[in-house]
Image: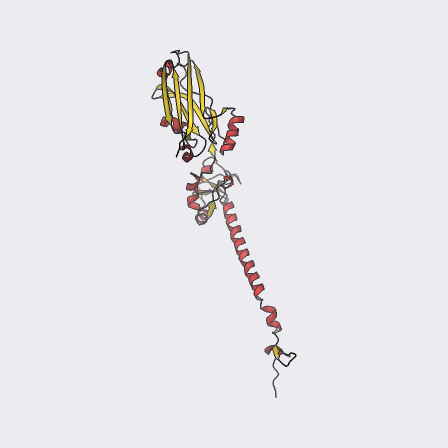
Length: 315
């Protein structure tokens, strides 16, 4: 007896015009086997989904590493409350309870999150200010300490101002909020007056802001005790980075009564605080006894005329 083969076991044959025979594709195979175009599309979709999943995973971890108080990326040691809410060590030292659930904070470390964080690459915290570099989790903090895009502190003299920002913002801040004297040009002549010169040990005069050579410079003048001896000090701050400050020199001169004292130096970047510059004595230093010779020897009212000039060093 002849055995009938299943229809799906052999391909269908058709006779084309001219007598040639062609095999028709199996219908089941044609439905299940993707074409080259479909296969490529599926591969692309799979790759996109994989990348999307990876991005989402990193985004979630980055969110987990964000301190709920300061909103900065947390670095080990990362602390948590008894309910699992995390915060950075800097903020933990400032609070007693969890900012999320108000539970009392102990000394619990979130070791799991610390281990996950070690494998991440994260952007600089100053990304919004122009730094687009990506760093391994461990080295990011080290970079941020010297990142050229990190904001500058307000250089205002007198009270310590908590404001920071880029140079253009700080110039407007000094002008509008602190109402400092502003001048265009690289030369200046200022008179500083102190009443009761013998009685005042510490004083700071209004900062003066100069614009020249496409940059901004701050002239400081203040009084303080140097090894118990009262002195006056004048110096210039450069509003920018140290490598740009080194492109300039400046001179300061105090004179009167046929006497003259001159200082020449390099402006200090405002990355260096006033206290840092003062401690380094990097400026024009005038002892009070000497200052009286420039001011007619009047101990009741000290008047000092300070002239100066800023110039660009020719390379």
